[in-house]
Length: 115
View 1 (cartoon, helix red, strand yellow):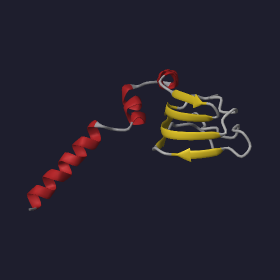
View 2 (cartoon, helix red, strand yellow):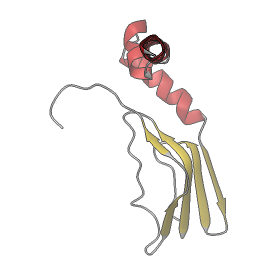
View 3 (cartoon, one colour):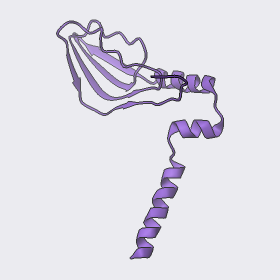
């Protein structure tokens, strides 16, 4: 029984090492800030925003400056917000309904200085 639990622990450790977070992979690969910006640009190109009459759907990767000002209802599906980008929902119509239906994931990045 001890061997089995040890084997599972080793397997979990190897899986975690192989699937390290993107930030750790970038650090290991020696990518610079410009590399991070290229990754963010590629992620932003993969975003999806669709609107029907007065309702808007946000899915995919959020792009800075996405215009939701004409939306009276916003449905946020599975959405990824890249590191360094703020999910800005402040420009919706007054009284708009915002509904989260999926998982929203926020990217992380290192920076110098206080919060």
